[in-house]
Length: 340
Image (cartoon, rainbow, N blue to C red; front, side, top):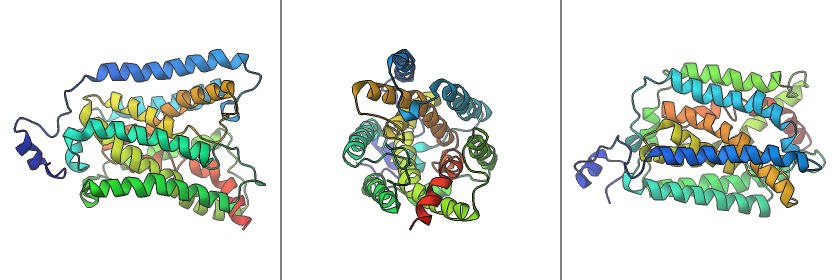
């Protein structure tokens, strides 16, 4: 098998192959239509089922307002607007930059989807852990302490950092080569503009961030960034942005299709976010459909940053750990770290 880091090796295997050209094994349109149908069906099912439920899962409170005021604007600004503003950018050499073997991209994409779904079910049901602490629970200072944070971090580091990085090493992934391709100066305007939107957005929407004690900021921001990086940020960077998205990009000749499929992937990553309720069938249906309806849009926003820049780390700054998670989590982590 040719070295995945070598474009010349791939060309030797297939002289007619263009390493920058997406595979032609299928067209993107049916896949895009399928993913859109999943989102539309989930949205329809949620709003049809919600009126017949005596209560909603905590995560789904204010669903319509959240969809209209948070999630659809994220989709509009981070996907539609960003794609338009960067429409004239040159194509990204995904195969070279991410050490890909084009012949195994489909198999590996299916594999990472399966790995995520299985591990989410195991970690959520058995480990009672979700992508964002203290998922699937709502935060309770009497129940959640530094020990529970450490368990969550350990589970996610082992599952979504250690194992995937070991697999990438086995696949001869060139980390230094990837870092050399990143164009931080060119993309600085994207980082600054979208960081500001995602940082101040939750504050404007009512996140309890302003007016906290100084010790809460000191402990909550620094401690929150560290544990969120290990438990949520790096797992998404590695599994979704370094492994999945580059492979999708050489399978489909459509940025929007890649972004949509990656959005569904992120929704699976969020199945055990804080406030979901799987205590019975009705609550489970509402939880799953709400997650797909909302987190797929968030995931598409995250994916768009990587698709248009080729930089798998930008979303970490603009739409995750260093932006919205700070105003959303500072008070919680300040209390947790102060209690020790």
